[in-house]
Amino acid sequence: MACNSTMIITLLLFLSSYVHSSNSQETWIRAGYWDSVSEMPVSNINSALFTHLVCAFSVINSSTYHIHINSSKESYFSTFTGTVRVKNPSVKTLLSILARRGGLPTFSSMINQSSYRKSFIESSIYTARLYGFDGLDLSVGPSMSINMTNLGILFDEWRDAIASDSRKSGKSQLLLVMSATYSPAQHSVTYPIDIMKRTLDWIHLVAYDYHVPAEFNFTGAHAALYGTSNWVNTDEWIKEWLRGGLSASKLVLGLPYHGYAWTLVNPNEKEFGAPSSGPGVTSDGSMGYKNIKSFIQGYGYGAAAVYNSTYVTKLFVVGSTWINFDDVETIKAKISYAKENNLSGYSVFQLSNDDNWILSRA
Image (cartoon, rainbow, N blue to C red; front, top):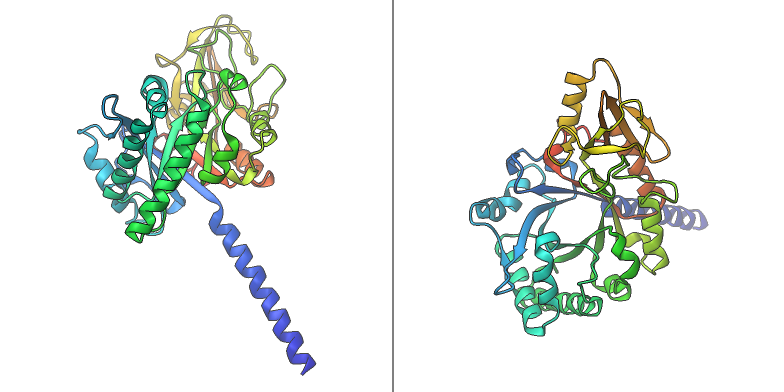
């Protein structure tokens, strides 16, 4: 009898361990952004490589505060979920709402007025349900023009409305996610972290575009994982969130599938921080990974990209062209960092910049 009891206990412990392991595996987020301005058809997305796919971007109408999708793109949004589930029936989809840059004034106006918030929230839930999305992603950066108290009120009201919608419809609650970008203004802006902890499912950290040639006259790592005190880097940014009271499990690490090219003032000065006369190769210097790879093959004259362990990035220099980007090696290093620091996963931007899915398989 004692032997049977021991066997049962052992079996239960094994099953418990297996279930915990399975759940942990299932909760590891592998998210990817598809941008509607890209030339990649939705049907070409290898959705089997992801747990979540984000359809970007819708915007906020400046008059009605309703969600607006460009009429020329609407068919892509309305069929997005059904299309990506052909290859992966279990993938979750989110509708991304762009409230940065040109959309910031409208967003700021919306959160400051109760009736405007109500219109926005109702429209976002309606649109997500109409097109079969599983959640909503708000893409907004820190700004002195955003009233953080009212941002917290928005999140509270949004979560309450999502819960109410779930009760009425009998469907699972929509996911509610925020994509947070880094800005120097963040140091003088206090996010409503206590409210964000209880209302948001997670936060996509836009851990790139820290240092770009259109804004700085010297070279730099645009997606540095680590760095010196003079450089913005992801590790320090994450520590800021944690010091503010956010748990690591609420953070999803953003990974860029693009890099930036700079034009060196002096081709002999190739280090990080070298003087630059502006962007290289393209008008703003931005280049997708597959285009960077093609450029190196076509114009590298046998030169190879070099791994920089200080920033965890790749650097390629030929003549006066200086290119900083991520590849399989750096993507793997950043995913390992996310796991070691108990983050909930990673999100990539954007899918069309991959080269035959080699980054997405890293």
